[in-house]
Image 1: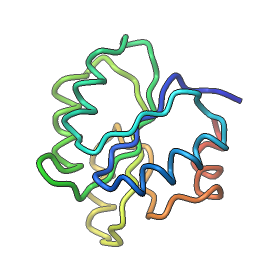
Image 2 (image 1 turned 180 degrees about the vertical axis):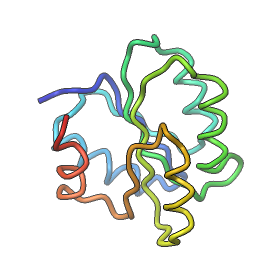
Image 3 (image 1 turned 120 degrees about the vertical axis):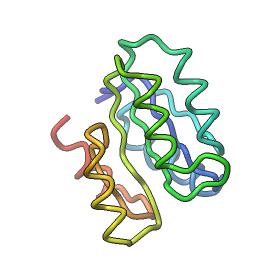
Length: 127
């Protein structure tokens, strides 16, 4: 069932990353799951990967230093040739955040925390 080369969990909460890593590991869509507490570190690591390697990025919005929106803007600036899948995973229930996410063509989903097996299944049912 492995369908993606790597998964990035970008969230400043290590407990969320740990739980999400275990859930995604059970789902089996990738053998490589990397956790990042800072968005800048995820961008740095992404720059080291070949462009043809498909990465699924679960991105929190509310983070210090570089928030999720700033991450998306940097991603667009730095990685125009990549074809990754970015899913916002946030505690935000703000309708405006969902609307703003739709303005980013590279965002393929918006999930509210906590991540569950059902949410993972629905997100990846077409892959």
